[in-house]
Length: 393
Ligand SMILES: Cc1cc2nc3c(=O)[nH]c(=O)nc-3n(C[C@H](O)[C@H](O)[C@H](O)COP(=O)(O)OP(=O)(O)OC[C@H]3O[C@@H](n4cnc5c(N)ncnc54)[C@H](O)[C@@H]3O)c2cc1C
Image (cartoon, rainbow, N blue to C red; front, side, top):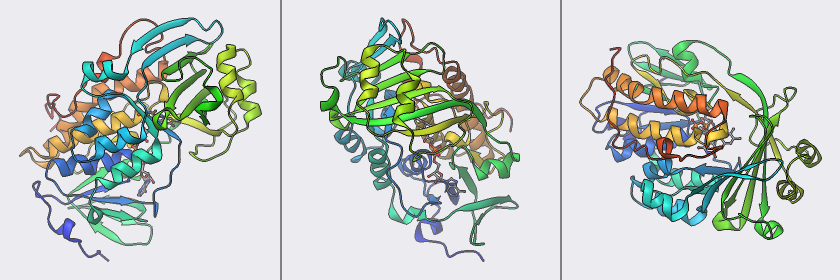
């Protein structure tokens, strides 16, 4: 049975298309926000019945913050209210503590890139983004089971209900049903790496240097590192540690880890890094999965963004940032007078090379270990980058 259209669905907005976004995570909400800025209506179908404050942190680099700032309204100020602005991006060696790179961020990044780096609780980002999407666009507790690409795409939900539309945006994460419907099943690859995440009150570690900065302690191999940065206006410190552990495969934002295991994994690290781990009372643990870059992001009426399309290792802190950039470029493409197929291919052609380079860079984990700057990642402006050629249409 086809459901009743809401007012927002009935009015397909400037694009003249009914647009369904599957997934209301960072990428799906960013798509809704960007489409709204472009004057295009959409509906977001999110499987959870309410947003949970899971996942602890998010590190939003200037390229991502700039996209959200450009939307206007309260979004930019909400992010700044709950966030912190790391003063430097520092690289240090795990054993000697030697500093191999120090890049000025804070006000200097804002002057250089037009937006700051913001580190904040993931829940604060999600609620600020959710509040920038009209209520009439949000359909919570709607889990998409599959998508039929007939004369018009049809979403089929777990409860058997159906929704016809003109364009399906698959923003449903690494296990994307939309991706499977478009290109067939293919499991993501377990990397053999686990991530530990902990938040500690700053008071417990205030005696350590650089607590107002982002510091990456580079480990003895590319999978092993400890990253530290401030959250919540600097009142809390976030600790993000990764290491190889091929026997642990659980992918979760909420699974608890063992503090003893965390500390044991980094016993050879510099005393300052170990002091941070000693200050952790609780830790969450998750296995990391990736996919290789995709050749095709669209079948002409369905299109992918964010982790549904290009999940990556967190070593360049770009997963959410790339989803946010995708959203702005996709909205711009859908706002052109192009046919749907041309607009979606134009989006793919604009975004594919950059995201593939960042996926590969995140996998090799060498970026900013030594001298250099973050320009090629941070100065990208998704609202003004030239749009691609739509070569395959
Ligand atoms: C440990 C770790 C640390 C990270 N740190 C950073 C960082 O500091 N900076 C950064 O930029 N990125 C970071 N990332 C990456 C970032 O979290 C992801 O890239 C980002 O969340 C992707 O957003 P998304 O919306 O594409 O997917 P998701 O966040 O996975 O959201 C998908 C949404 O779709 C919904 N959904 C799924 N299936 C269905 C369905 N069938 N029907 C309806 N709804 C559905 C889900 O409930 C969810 O809300 C990190 C990742 C990890 C694992």
